[in-house]
Length: 188
Image (cartoon, rainbow, N blue to C red; front, side, top):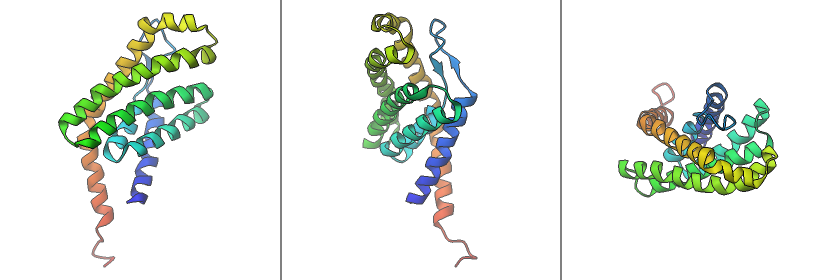
């Protein structure tokens, strides 16, 4: 079971990095440095499927490897990605874990982006001045027109994509698990 989770974690982390590298675009024209990418979706699926802990570990792995492999973001980008995605995955998967049903999934995918957005307001007030070399007042001025809408949109888009894909991916992972755990006729 642990070996399977390790393999899935590695595969889905790699998928997250590839998605982030290949698909990214600004959501808010006034803040073109705030780029959306669907790389959080595989992390979110794993957090929901297996555990909040796996989701947070994947977030750390992907945050660091993406920065190292692409040279984008640097240490501040790693920190901001870890905070944003980590909070989102942790909240959504903890809510879903209580009652693994459609209602909990929807609730988690609605509440998580709201919590993430609140946390990112605070994180942006402290980290963005260091990251972009701007004043805190400039960051405050960017909250309503850019930072808050970006995080809400990003969270909503990731939640919708995850909601649409989760059951199919989850079923696929279950089939893969059955193939691994059942001995075949040759090995008996």
